[in-house]
Length: 499
Image (cartoon, rainbow, N blue to C red; front, side, top):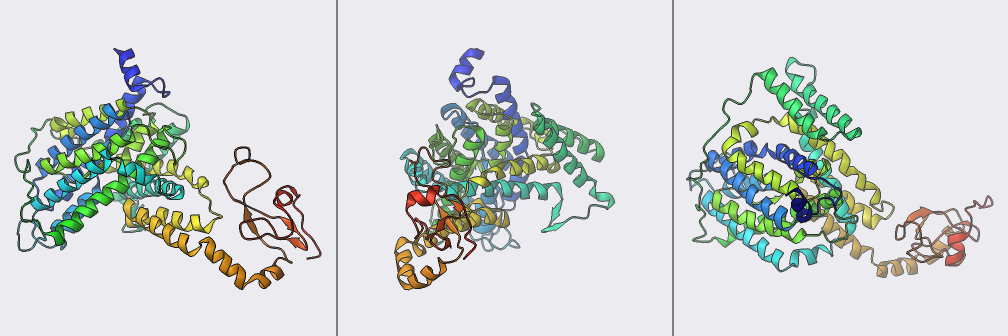
């Protein structure tokens, strides 16, 4: 039996083990268990029964995660995006938070119609996925945007972790010396614990950290789960979506937002998490089985519209399981099984406090910063869009905002710095440039003199000084005016003291 599982999921081939995959799935689930508390609260403010939302969340997560694990053999967990849940409630149903969600006169649309919009966006996502349009279009996304997305997601996770720990309150450091600040110190202690265990590569270190902090918190607050078993409820939301009397002015923007945000979130997480799991080594590679993750998002979102939940995307929090060693679909199936179990034991799993999962999010954020070194910061056309992508994600609490601004700025600065403008500026300022080249100047260029395959860091344009007549000089992004490509690449670094 174990050999059959190993062969089916290619566990040994990917350098993992069955026990590691199961532990990774448990870790991913525990890190995501807070959704069983938070998502019903957010969706409940739109008028949906909270108990039904818990059940709908579990069903949607379970079925879509099974698709990812069984058919895609990926260690990803699918879950509702809290940003999409917030948009559902405060952007579609009740743009005015003071309005009554149960009153048609004060709500933009009923939650039943909004759930219908969710279903339509899921169908659109599914069609785009099965026709491979999503995968093909992602090949045209620049690598610096993909890398920036990975880093930005890490920063966003860290911000969420700091807020969940209580360390950041309304953008400021919280009071850490009062008698009520002990949960902050408990969470920070958990951070040091998981950091130390990760340093020594202790198997299950992240899971140990979550359990220790949760148990200490329950004991200190005498808040152990009051009940363990609960009967699932779904009567209030099952097939309650309403797509009749479609209002294009409200429905189309809502559907487009659901679709595009889910698309960018899934695409960004697909690349970032695959690199973290070692499934790909470069952001330009295709993820094996990646199409199934997008298909699962579409199917999961359709299921969510039937059960009363927000759109389903790849949960970035499952990075915790990947960090535990998850590399195959067995990790996903383990998490899916626990979501199914949580249908009946939601009080127990949902009682995991936010301060217990916060250290994991912060640790993951620090790990994802490793990709910073792969961005060509010396190249403005790359650095500026990458910076916007990275910074806007945590500042706006939205992955899609960072991606949109990154892509938009890439297009604009790509046009404004096209080679045509290089020729114009060269024509207008050639004399000044010649005079400037008589002095020390700075240059960014690609090493020459060898084939791209044999150059160190081929393709990376590192800042170097080159010597030409009259001192150090260099053209814009080509060879220096004082010598050939071969001379520029091999001539030793010197400073002409006469200049």
